Image (cartoon, rainbow, N blue to C red; front, side, top):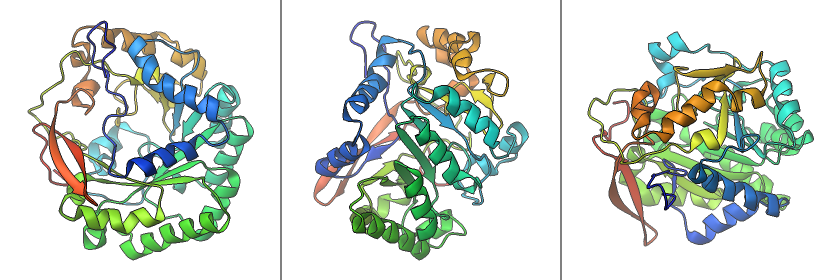
Length: 360
Protein backbone atom coordinates (compact mmCIF):
# COMPACT_ATOMS: atom_id res chain seq x y z
CA UNK A 1 0.00 0.00 0.00
CA UNK A 2 1.18 3.55 -0.69
CA UNK A 3 0.87 6.49 1.67
CA UNK A 4 -0.80 8.70 -0.94
CA UNK A 5 1.61 11.59 -0.46
CA UNK A 6 5.21 10.60 -1.09
CA UNK A 7 4.56 7.95 -3.68
CA UNK A 8 6.16 5.22 -1.60
CA UNK A 9 5.08 1.61 -1.95
CA UNK A 10 5.02 -0.04 1.47
CA UNK A 11 3.84 -3.67 1.29
CA UNK A 12 2.12 -4.75 4.50
CA UNK A 13 1.95 -8.49 5.28
CA UNK A 14 3.35 -9.43 1.90
CA UNK A 15 4.22 -13.09 1.36
CA UNK A 16 1.50 -14.94 3.28
CA UNK A 17 -2.04 -15.14 1.94
CA UNK A 18 -5.29 -16.77 2.93
CA UNK A 19 -7.12 -19.19 0.67
CA UNK A 20 -10.01 -19.26 3.11
CA UNK A 21 -13.51 -17.77 3.15
CA UNK A 22 -14.12 -14.18 4.16
CA UNK A 23 -16.26 -15.42 7.07
CA UNK A 24 -13.50 -17.62 8.46
CA UNK A 25 -10.91 -14.88 7.98
CA UNK A 26 -13.07 -12.47 9.97
CA UNK A 27 -13.60 -15.02 12.70
CA UNK A 28 -9.86 -15.70 12.88
CA UNK A 29 -9.21 -12.00 13.44
CA UNK A 30 -12.02 -11.77 15.98
CA UNK A 31 -10.64 -14.66 18.00
CA UNK A 32 -7.12 -13.17 17.88
CA UNK A 33 -8.40 -9.99 19.49
CA UNK A 34 -10.81 -11.60 21.92
CA UNK A 35 -10.37 -10.17 25.41
CA UNK A 36 -8.30 -7.16 24.30
CA UNK A 37 -10.46 -5.89 21.48
CA UNK A 38 -9.69 -2.16 21.72
CA UNK A 39 -5.94 -2.64 22.13
CA UNK A 40 -5.92 -5.24 19.36
CA UNK A 41 -7.63 -2.84 16.97
CA UNK A 42 -4.99 -0.20 17.70
CA UNK A 43 -2.21 -2.78 17.29
CA UNK A 44 -3.45 -3.87 13.87
CA UNK A 45 -4.09 -0.29 12.77
CA UNK A 46 -0.58 0.75 13.80
CA UNK A 47 0.91 -2.28 12.03
CA UNK A 48 -0.25 -0.80 8.73
CA UNK A 49 -0.17 2.92 9.44
CA UNK A 50 3.15 3.43 11.24
CA UNK A 51 5.24 2.24 8.24
CA UNK A 52 3.29 4.49 5.90
CA UNK A 53 3.81 7.47 8.17
CA UNK A 54 7.41 6.38 8.85
CA UNK A 55 6.69 6.85 12.52
CA UNK A 56 8.79 5.17 15.19
CA UNK A 57 6.87 4.04 18.26
CA UNK A 58 8.61 4.07 21.66
CA UNK A 59 8.77 0.27 21.49
CA UNK A 60 8.15 -2.04 18.53
CA UNK A 61 4.71 -3.54 18.01
CA UNK A 62 6.15 -7.04 17.82
CA UNK A 63 9.34 -8.63 19.07
CA UNK A 64 10.49 -11.82 17.36
CA UNK A 65 12.29 -14.00 19.90
CA UNK A 66 14.11 -16.90 18.32
CA UNK A 67 13.95 -19.55 21.01
CA UNK A 68 15.86 -21.97 18.80
CA UNK A 69 17.97 -21.54 15.68
CA UNK A 70 18.17 -25.33 15.50
CA UNK A 71 15.75 -27.50 13.52
CA UNK A 72 15.36 -31.28 13.45
CA UNK A 73 14.06 -31.45 9.87
CA UNK A 74 15.94 -31.21 6.56
CA UNK A 75 13.45 -29.60 4.20
CA UNK A 76 14.96 -29.16 0.71
CA UNK A 77 14.04 -25.47 0.38
CA UNK A 78 15.24 -24.39 3.85
CA UNK A 79 18.32 -22.21 4.28
CA UNK A 80 19.07 -23.67 7.74
CA UNK A 81 20.53 -26.80 6.13
CA UNK A 82 23.05 -24.85 4.03
CA UNK A 83 26.75 -24.52 4.89
CA UNK A 84 26.44 -20.77 4.48
CA UNK A 85 23.82 -20.57 7.25
CA UNK A 86 25.90 -22.73 9.58
CA UNK A 87 28.91 -20.53 8.90
CA UNK A 88 27.18 -17.27 9.83
CA UNK A 89 24.67 -18.28 12.51
CA UNK A 90 25.30 -19.57 16.00
CA UNK A 91 22.91 -22.54 16.11
CA UNK A 92 21.70 -22.61 19.68
CA UNK A 93 18.75 -22.12 22.00
CA UNK A 94 18.00 -18.90 23.87
CA UNK A 95 19.12 -18.78 27.49
CA UNK A 96 16.29 -18.48 29.99
CA UNK A 97 17.98 -15.53 31.66
CA UNK A 98 18.17 -13.67 28.36
CA UNK A 99 14.53 -14.41 27.62
CA UNK A 100 13.33 -13.12 30.99
CA UNK A 101 15.54 -10.00 30.66
CA UNK A 102 13.82 -9.14 27.40
CA UNK A 103 10.30 -9.84 28.68
CA UNK A 104 10.90 -7.90 31.89
CA UNK A 105 11.68 -4.84 29.75
CA UNK A 106 8.97 -5.11 27.10
CA UNK A 107 6.07 -6.47 29.19
CA UNK A 108 3.19 -3.99 29.01
CA UNK A 109 4.99 -2.00 26.31
CA UNK A 110 5.03 -4.42 23.35
CA UNK A 111 1.65 -5.96 22.41
CA UNK A 112 2.93 -9.14 20.78
CA UNK A 113 5.84 -11.53 20.64
CA UNK A 114 6.58 -14.31 18.19
CA UNK A 115 8.55 -17.20 19.67
CA UNK A 116 10.11 -18.38 16.43
CA UNK A 117 12.28 -17.35 13.54
CA UNK A 118 14.69 -19.67 11.76
CA UNK A 119 14.71 -22.92 13.73
CA UNK A 120 12.06 -25.05 15.41
CA UNK A 121 10.95 -23.11 18.49
CA UNK A 122 9.36 -26.10 20.21
CA UNK A 123 12.81 -27.67 20.61
CA UNK A 124 13.41 -25.19 23.42
CA UNK A 125 13.12 -27.16 26.65
CA UNK A 126 11.31 -24.33 28.44
CA UNK A 127 8.94 -23.41 25.62
CA UNK A 128 5.85 -23.56 27.85
CA UNK A 129 7.62 -21.58 30.58
CA UNK A 130 8.44 -18.88 28.02
CA UNK A 131 4.76 -18.53 27.13
CA UNK A 132 3.71 -18.50 30.76
CA UNK A 133 6.30 -15.89 31.73
CA UNK A 134 5.44 -13.59 28.82
CA UNK A 135 1.73 -13.71 29.60
CA UNK A 136 2.42 -13.00 33.28
CA UNK A 137 4.27 -9.83 32.28
CA UNK A 138 1.45 -8.42 30.16
CA UNK A 139 2.22 -9.58 26.63
CA UNK A 140 -1.17 -9.73 24.93
CA UNK A 141 -0.40 -12.07 22.03
CA UNK A 142 2.14 -14.89 22.11
CA UNK A 143 2.49 -16.74 18.81
CA UNK A 144 4.78 -19.28 17.23
CA UNK A 145 5.51 -20.99 13.93
CA UNK A 146 6.20 -24.73 14.04
CA UNK A 147 6.42 -27.81 11.86
CA UNK A 148 4.08 -29.41 14.38
CA UNK A 149 6.13 -32.51 15.09
CA UNK A 150 6.17 -31.88 18.84
CA UNK A 151 2.50 -30.92 19.18
CA UNK A 152 1.41 -34.06 20.98
CA UNK A 153 -1.90 -33.86 22.84
CA UNK A 154 -0.14 -33.60 26.20
CA UNK A 155 2.24 -30.89 25.04
CA UNK A 156 -0.62 -28.97 23.42
CA UNK A 157 -2.56 -29.05 26.69
CA UNK A 158 0.51 -27.72 28.49
CA UNK A 159 1.02 -24.75 26.19
CA UNK A 160 -2.71 -23.95 26.12
CA UNK A 161 -2.62 -23.81 29.91
CA UNK A 162 0.46 -21.57 29.66
CA UNK A 163 -1.53 -19.12 27.49
CA UNK A 164 -0.40 -19.55 23.87
CA UNK A 165 -2.58 -17.38 21.63
CA UNK A 166 -1.68 -18.37 18.07
CA UNK A 167 0.02 -21.36 16.46
CA UNK A 168 0.95 -21.50 12.79
CA UNK A 169 1.79 -24.95 11.44
CA UNK A 170 3.85 -25.29 8.27
CA UNK A 171 2.36 -28.11 6.19
CA UNK A 172 3.68 -28.26 2.66
CA UNK A 173 1.17 -30.31 0.71
CA UNK A 174 -0.64 -33.48 1.72
CA UNK A 175 0.26 -37.17 1.79
CA UNK A 176 3.41 -38.17 -0.09
CA UNK A 177 4.11 -34.59 -1.22
CA UNK A 178 4.24 -33.49 2.41
CA UNK A 179 6.43 -36.40 3.47
CA UNK A 180 8.97 -35.76 0.71
CA UNK A 181 9.43 -32.20 2.00
CA UNK A 182 8.92 -32.44 5.76
CA UNK A 183 11.08 -35.48 6.49
CA UNK A 184 10.89 -37.41 8.78
CA UNK A 185 7.36 -36.38 9.87
CA UNK A 186 4.60 -38.66 8.62
CA UNK A 187 1.53 -36.90 7.26
CA UNK A 188 -0.96 -39.08 9.12
CA UNK A 189 0.87 -38.37 12.38
CA UNK A 190 0.63 -34.63 11.77
CA UNK A 191 -3.08 -34.89 10.97
CA UNK A 192 -3.70 -36.89 14.14
CA UNK A 193 -2.10 -34.08 16.17
CA UNK A 194 -4.12 -31.40 14.38
CA UNK A 195 -7.39 -33.27 14.90
CA UNK A 196 -6.58 -33.80 18.58
CA UNK A 197 -5.90 -30.09 19.06
CA UNK A 198 -9.18 -29.17 17.44
CA UNK A 199 -11.10 -31.68 19.54
CA UNK A 200 -9.47 -30.39 22.71
CA UNK A 201 -10.42 -26.80 21.88
CA UNK A 202 -13.98 -27.71 20.93
CA UNK A 203 -14.48 -29.85 24.01
CA UNK A 204 -13.61 -26.89 26.22
CA UNK A 205 -15.19 -24.14 24.15
CA UNK A 206 -11.83 -22.50 23.46
CA UNK A 207 -11.34 -19.96 20.69
CA UNK A 208 -7.60 -19.69 21.34
CA UNK A 209 -5.04 -20.61 20.43
CA UNK A 210 -6.13 -19.84 16.90
CA UNK A 211 -4.48 -22.37 14.61
CA UNK A 212 -3.40 -21.59 11.07
CA UNK A 213 -1.99 -24.07 8.59
CA UNK A 214 0.13 -22.78 5.74
CA UNK A 215 2.23 -24.29 2.97
CA UNK A 216 4.43 -23.22 0.10
CA UNK A 217 2.41 -22.84 -3.09
CA UNK A 218 4.23 -25.33 -5.38
CA UNK A 219 3.43 -28.09 -2.87
CA UNK A 220 -0.27 -27.16 -3.00
CA UNK A 221 -0.91 -26.02 -6.57
CA UNK A 222 -1.82 -29.42 -8.06
CA UNK A 223 -4.14 -30.38 -5.19
CA UNK A 224 -5.58 -27.11 -3.92
CA UNK A 225 -9.04 -28.43 -3.12
CA UNK A 226 -7.69 -31.51 -1.37
CA UNK A 227 -5.31 -29.37 0.68
CA UNK A 228 -8.09 -27.05 1.82
CA UNK A 229 -10.60 -29.82 2.49
CA UNK A 230 -8.03 -31.77 4.50
CA UNK A 231 -7.14 -28.97 6.90
CA UNK A 232 -10.05 -26.52 7.02
CA UNK A 233 -12.38 -28.64 9.22
CA UNK A 234 -9.71 -28.83 11.92
CA UNK A 235 -8.05 -25.39 11.96
CA UNK A 236 -9.09 -21.75 12.03
CA UNK A 237 -7.42 -20.61 8.81
CA UNK A 238 -5.75 -22.15 5.76
CA UNK A 239 -3.07 -20.08 4.02
CA UNK A 240 -0.14 -20.33 1.64
CA UNK A 241 3.18 -18.71 0.78
CA UNK A 242 4.47 -18.13 -2.75
CA UNK A 243 7.87 -19.78 -3.06
CA UNK A 244 10.63 -17.35 -2.22
CA UNK A 245 14.34 -17.63 -2.95
CA UNK A 246 15.08 -19.42 0.33
CA UNK A 247 18.47 -20.66 -0.89
CA UNK A 248 19.70 -17.44 -2.51
CA UNK A 249 19.94 -18.95 -5.99
CA UNK A 250 18.19 -16.26 -8.06
CA UNK A 251 20.38 -14.13 -10.31
CA UNK A 252 17.69 -12.27 -12.29
CA UNK A 253 15.42 -10.22 -10.02
CA UNK A 254 12.93 -7.48 -10.85
CA UNK A 255 12.17 -4.92 -8.15
CA UNK A 256 9.19 -2.76 -7.28
CA UNK A 257 9.26 0.96 -7.98
CA UNK A 258 9.46 3.27 -4.93
CA UNK A 259 9.67 0.36 -2.49
CA UNK A 260 10.04 1.12 1.21
CA UNK A 261 10.26 -1.65 3.79
CA UNK A 262 7.71 -1.57 6.64
CA UNK A 263 9.57 -3.77 9.13
CA UNK A 264 11.76 -1.16 10.82
CA UNK A 265 8.58 0.49 12.10
CA UNK A 266 6.84 -2.74 13.13
CA UNK A 267 9.15 -5.28 14.73
CA UNK A 268 12.50 -6.07 16.29
CA UNK A 269 14.10 -9.44 15.61
CA UNK A 270 16.28 -11.07 18.28
CA UNK A 271 18.23 -14.23 17.55
CA UNK A 272 18.67 -17.13 19.96
CA UNK A 273 22.15 -15.85 20.85
CA UNK A 274 20.89 -12.33 21.60
CA UNK A 275 22.12 -10.71 18.38
CA UNK A 276 19.55 -8.37 16.82
CA UNK A 277 18.98 -8.54 13.07
CA UNK A 278 17.72 -5.53 11.17
CA UNK A 279 14.67 -7.52 10.01
CA UNK A 280 13.04 -10.93 10.00
CA UNK A 281 14.46 -11.70 6.54
CA UNK A 282 18.14 -11.47 7.46
CA UNK A 283 18.47 -15.23 7.79
CA UNK A 284 22.27 -15.25 8.02
CA UNK A 285 22.98 -12.35 10.44
CA UNK A 286 24.40 -10.24 7.61
CA UNK A 287 23.38 -6.92 9.19
CA UNK A 288 23.45 -7.15 12.97
CA UNK A 289 22.23 -3.94 14.61
CA UNK A 290 22.61 -4.79 18.29
CA UNK A 291 23.19 -7.31 21.05
CA UNK A 292 20.50 -7.72 23.71
CA UNK A 293 23.00 -9.37 26.03
CA UNK A 294 24.58 -5.95 26.57
CA UNK A 295 21.87 -3.53 25.36
CA UNK A 296 18.17 -3.01 25.99
CA UNK A 297 15.41 -3.42 23.43
CA UNK A 298 14.75 0.30 23.68
CA UNK A 299 18.39 1.17 23.03
CA UNK A 300 18.57 -1.00 19.92
CA UNK A 301 15.17 0.12 18.59
CA UNK A 302 16.24 3.77 18.79
CA UNK A 303 19.92 3.14 18.18
CA UNK A 304 22.22 4.48 15.51
CA UNK A 305 22.25 1.29 13.45
CA UNK A 306 18.46 0.88 13.34
CA UNK A 307 18.02 4.55 12.52
CA UNK A 308 20.52 4.10 9.69
CA UNK A 309 18.33 1.29 8.33
CA UNK A 310 15.34 3.62 8.40
CA UNK A 311 17.24 6.42 6.66
CA UNK A 312 18.46 4.06 3.94
CA UNK A 313 14.90 2.91 3.26
CA UNK A 314 13.73 6.52 2.89
CA UNK A 315 16.10 7.10 -0.01
CA UNK A 316 15.14 6.38 -3.59
CA UNK A 317 16.04 2.71 -4.15
CA UNK A 318 18.07 2.88 -0.99
CA UNK A 319 17.32 -0.77 -0.31
CA UNK A 320 19.54 -1.68 -3.28
CA UNK A 321 22.58 -0.70 -1.23
CA UNK A 322 21.91 -3.52 1.22
CA UNK A 323 22.83 -7.10 0.29
CA UNK A 324 20.11 -8.37 2.61
CA UNK A 325 17.43 -6.18 1.02
CA UNK A 326 18.47 -7.06 -2.53
CA UNK A 327 17.89 -10.72 -1.76
CA UNK A 328 14.62 -10.14 0.12
CA UNK A 329 11.22 -11.03 -1.32
CA UNK A 330 9.55 -7.82 -0.10
CA UNK A 331 10.92 -5.49 -2.82
CA UNK A 332 10.49 -8.09 -5.58
CA UNK A 333 7.91 -7.72 -8.32
CA UNK A 334 5.17 -10.34 -8.48
CA UNK A 335 2.96 -11.78 -11.20
CA UNK A 336 -0.55 -13.03 -10.57
CA UNK A 337 -1.69 -16.62 -10.86
CA UNK A 338 -5.39 -17.37 -10.50
CA UNK A 339 -6.46 -20.29 -8.32
CA UNK A 340 -9.76 -21.69 -7.10
CA UNK A 341 -11.00 -23.61 -4.10
CA UNK A 342 -14.61 -24.35 -3.19
CA UNK A 343 -15.84 -22.22 -6.09
CA UNK A 344 -13.92 -19.21 -4.73
CA UNK A 345 -11.11 -17.64 -6.69
CA UNK A 346 -8.01 -16.21 -5.10
CA UNK A 347 -4.75 -14.79 -6.40
CA UNK A 348 -1.28 -16.20 -5.97
CA UNK A 349 1.38 -13.50 -6.21
CA UNK A 350 4.41 -15.40 -7.47
CA UNK A 351 7.75 -13.63 -7.60
CA UNK A 352 8.90 -12.75 -11.11
CA UNK A 353 11.67 -15.06 -12.40
CA UNK A 354 11.35 -17.31 -9.32
CA UNK A 355 11.59 -20.99 -10.30
CA UNK A 356 8.52 -22.76 -8.92
CA UNK A 357 10.40 -25.87 -7.92
CA UNK A 358 11.05 -26.78 -4.29
CA UNK A 359 14.75 -26.91 -3.48
CA UNK A 360 15.78 -24.66 -6.37
